[in-house]
Length: 369
Image (tube, rainbow, N blue to C red; front, side):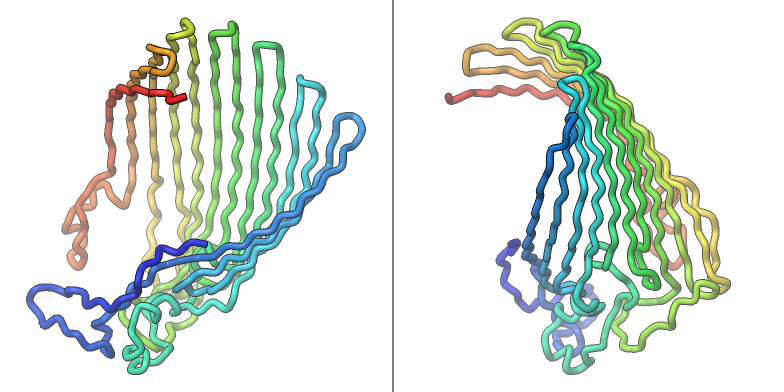
């Protein structure tokens, strides 16, 4: 249960300093705050059966109902289940394969429910219950009907007493109802490889490699909103006023580090991480729209961290940590977009938030036990 316990009150926002502010509830000059809250109820049932040869088969059912306030859908109901096959061959090899599928349904999607909840009754009486500002065909992905298929694989291999290898693969597909604006499909895949090597009891080395892919599709159509209205916009026609954007994101992460206990009192931790990601866009538009290709978005991130640990007393530990971070991105929505790029729009006139930073921290830990 999530309730921020905020009272709902009437508010008259300040429009600007050169016009009559207006305080007519029927005209929409008065607003009511909407303290968002939710109540979630979840039920899970799991069972398993051990098979010969180190195998185990398990299955489960799940259901989650979520009630939300001041949103287009009052309650969502997500149901599903999973199958899991596990294997263990002593301490040398173990792993599992899991398949999960869920289906989420919601109450009727009332597109202007949240909008009307922000006004007093006088505004609704004057304008009717059909007034809206946002696209009536828009479906917010976290409350929209959805089918989810997910598969995960994990393998752990103890090569020797000092060496371990772990591999994890994953795949997920989210499908939403077609014919609406917003997200219609989201597909993700990931692969992670972790290596561990302990040549001595006081020294541990590790390295990891990760790769992730994500493909998404969003649809919409040309329509001018933002002003209260009651006339529904024309239906989307993909060949005329509709558009569709396909995104393809790929990222790679590399890292390595060590944990070294030089003595019972002194220890050192080091880690280096490198990430690069690229996102490409495919754009299709109807004949009535002006469309142009969108450039790729790129990101590069480097992180170096070190920490020195010293046990000064039995219950007092000192720590010294240094960290270097380098963030670099190329974003077409920010780079080169000046304040007056478009004569009818006032932009922020900012650039991509590239930065390099160094930080040094000293800590003291006291154990009361």
